[in-house]
Image (tube, rainbow, N blue to C red; front, side, top):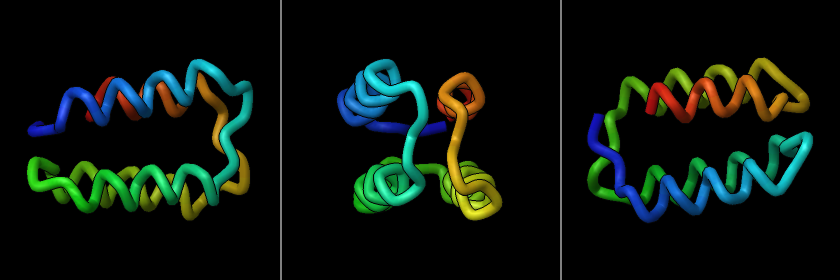
Length: 69
């Protein structure tokens, strides 16, 4: 998957600083990812589907998703 490494590191730093991630904040991060040119659309859609199905995202689960990205 093609992902901008600096942006992904910013996301990982945000995740590490929180216990629970608010969906609105995560959507802001995903909007940033969507604006990058190097993004695998199918993988991003999988993340968006996961976010829409949850109210709060557990950091461990999010780290699993980010590891896939």
